[in-house]
Amino acid sequence: MKHIRPYCYILALFFFAAALIGSSGSLFAAEAGNVVTGTIGYTNPQPSDNLPPVWLVTPFLVLLLMIATGPLLYHRFWEDHYAMVACGLGLVVSGYYGFFMRNGTQILEHTLEEYLSFIILISSLFVVTGGILIKIERRGSPWINALVLMFGALIANVIGTTGASMLLIRPYLRINEGRLKAFHIVFFIFIVSNIGGGLTPIGDPPLFLGFLKGVPFFWVFPKVFLPWVITVSGLLLLFIALDIKAGNGTLQGAEKKGGVTLKGAKNLWYLAAIIAAVFCDPAVIEGFPSLQNLVHVPFGIRELIMFGVAFAAFKTADKEALRRNEFNFEPIKEVAFLFIGIFATMIPALALIEAYAATHASDLSVSSFYWMTGALSGVLDNAPTYLNFLAAALGKFGLDIGSPDSIRFFAKGMDSPVQGDVSSDIYLMAISVASVFFGAISYIGNAPNFMVKNIAAQADVDVPDFVEYIFKYSIPILLPFFILVWVLFIYK
Image 1 (cartoon, rainbow, N blue to C red):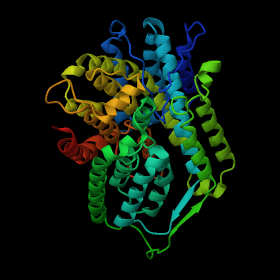
Image 2: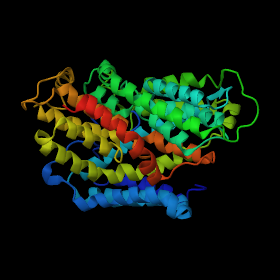
Image 3: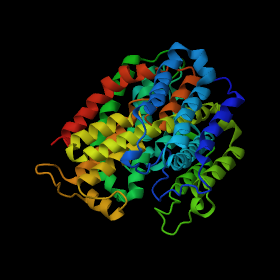
C-alpha cells in the first residue's frame, strides 16, 4: 500500500468511538484474564435471548472474501482502499451493537480494550526486533534454512511467535536472496509463526489465556511435546526435501563459511522488557494494580510499558540495523487496519459459536472439540476460540471457567461423566493443540502470518495469495499432520 487516506484513520477512530456511546460514563471493567499477549481475549457470555442475528455475520464473511480475492482480482483498489473497507464493515457491526443490542456498548468497549492490547504488543515487538540485525555469514541451503526454522520454533516459546517471526524473517530472506520460492515463506509461517510456539504459555496467545485462567504454567510442555515434535520434525523434513529440489537459484559467488553476527544487541534488553511486561497483570501477579479499574481507560499498565519501551527502542535504535533491515511501518499498518475490521466483524460470529458450544457441549466428543476448535482457529482469532471451547468442555464436566481451582482440576485429569469418554486433560490438550497448530491454516489465523507475508512481499518475494496459501499449502501439507496428531493423541 502506497498511502492511507486521512479519512481511513477517521473511520478507524469512529469505529471504536461507537463503543463509548450510551455507556453512561461507566466503562466495562475487564476481568483478570481478558487481556492477552497479542490477540483478542475472552468475550463475556451473552444471554441466549441477547444473541445477534445470524445475518450480522455477513460483514465478517465479506471481509474474509475480500482479503482472499482483493490482492488477486482487484489489486489496485484493494491496495488503496483496504483500510476503508475493513473499517466500514466494522462500523456495520459496531453500529448494530451500539444501538440495537442489549449490553452492546459494553461488548464494544471490551473489544476496544482487546484490540489495543493486541496492536500495542505486536507493534512493540515489531519495532524492537526491527532494530536487531542478525547477519548469517552463510548462503541459504536446505540445512541452514532448516536450522533457522528450528531455532525460530524454539525461541518462539520464549519470546512468542510474533517476536520470533519478526526477529528472523529478514535474515532468513537475506541468506536466500536469489533462490526464494513461495514455499520458503509458507513453511516459515507454519513453523515459526504458529506451531513452534506451542510448548509454553508465552509462545502463543491461547495458551497464555489458559495460564491466566488457571492452567498450570508447566502443564503445556509434557502434554503438547510429542505432537509438537512430530509436527515440527515432519514439516522440517518435508521442507528440506522441497528446498533440495529447488536448487541454488541465481545465487552467485563462493560459499561463505562465517558465523552469525548481531548488530543492535541492546534491543534484546528492550525485547526482554516487553516479554516481562506481558505478565504485569493482576491475574499473574497478585495485587498488581489495574489501571483500567483505577482511571477507566481502555488500556492498562502493561500497554503503557510496552508503548514506552517501543518508543525508546525506536528512538535509540542502531540506524544501520534499521537501514539494513529495510525497516518501515507498512507491515504493521496493514495488520492494524485489517484487524480493526476482523476484531469488530467477528464479534457476532464468536457470540453464536459460544452459544452453540455451550448448549451442545454434552453431545460433543473430544474429536469434535479438536476439529471445531482447529477449523475456527484458522479463520477466527484462535484465542477466543480456545476459551469458548474450553468453557464448553469445562461445562461438560460440571466445572466453571471462572474458577481457577476448577481449571486446575480439569488440567490434572478428571473422569468424564459420560461412560467410555476420555478424561478432562485430553480435552484440554485437544483444544490447546488445535488452537495453536491450526492458526497456520490461513493468513488471518495468527497475527504474525500477515506481517511475515507483508515483509516478504516488500522484498519482492513470490508470496502466495490467500486462496493459494490455503489450497496449495495448508490443506495438502498441514491437514495430514493434523490428522496424524488426532489419530495418535486425540481419537479414542
